[in-house]
Image (cartoon, rainbow, N blue to C red; front, side, top):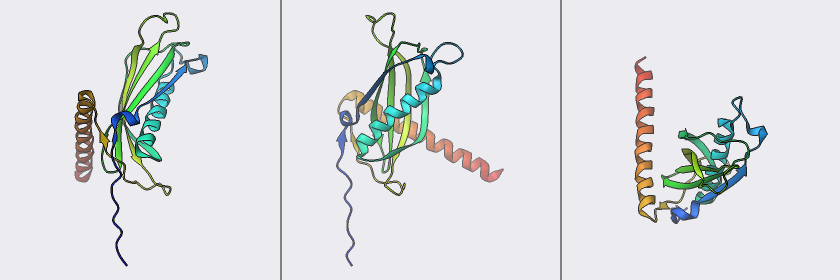
Length: 173
């Protein structure tokens, strides 16, 4: 029996993974303070990031971690909110997706959209059995894409170092 070699999937440019989702925030999205609940925005962020990861990897991708989410400004009922996502970095089976959320205020539609949240999520490509599968490399196209790729590598190194430090601490406890 001969061993079949599996070639890694061909890379795709960063622009291939770009996805935007938009929605108007309604009264059902509100928290006790009268602004949009952070959990609603988190789901919106995860949805757009998942679409970007699936597009880039060519199949199912699942959320493995949320490295960071920053809520910069409150979102109000009636705001038209756009979540923009792209794959910043890829490993063997994992991807970092960056998300930028902007809002167009319902009462000042002529103003520029404002950044209301940013996030970095880690996704893993999975096969039909739910096992990790190889994902194609991301090919940065611009200096900004290259900067995002390098910054994603820094976040990954920090995430792995934190995991190792916690495991080491637990081993001696």
